[in-house]
Image 1 (cartoon, rainbow, N blue to C red):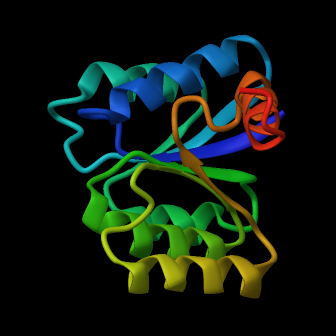
Image 2 (image 1 turned 180 degrees about the vertical axis):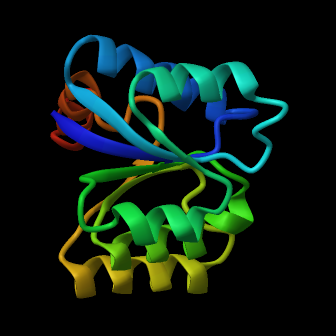
Amino acid sequence: MIKTCIIGVSGFGDTHFRDLLREADAGRMEPVAAAIINQDEEAAKCEKLRSLGTEIFDDYEEMLSAWGDRADLCMIPTGIHWHAPMTVAALEAGMNVFVEKPAAPTIQALQSMRSAEKRTGRFVAVGFQHTYNEATHVMKRRIVAGEF
C-alpha cells in the first residue's frame, strides 16, 4: 500500500482527493497526511480523511517534516506558482511526487524540480490526463514508426 500525503483538496484538488479515496477503498493507497489551509471550508473532507486515520496539517512544510521519511508519495494539486517549491520540498523530505500540470511556471522552476529529482533519487510524475496510459504509448510508437 502506498502511504500518501496530499497538499490541498479544494478546486482541482477535489479530483485528487476523490482519486485518493478511491485508491484507499481499493487498498492501493493509504492517506497518511494532508495539508489543508482552509479546513473550515473543507470540514467534511477533513473529517473523511481523519476517519481514515489521516493526520491533518494547516502547513505543508510541517506535514513534510512529520511524514517525509515515512510516506511514499505526495500529491500536489495546488496553484501553479506552488508546484516547484512544494515539489522540491517533498522530494527533499524523502517523498516521490505527483504534481498537477503544468509542472512549473518557468523553465528555471522546472530545472529546480529536475535537479531535486536527480539529487534525491525520487521521481516526479506530472498529471497529464493520458500520458501514463499504455494506449497513448502504443499510438505514439505507431505514429513515430510512420504507420499513420
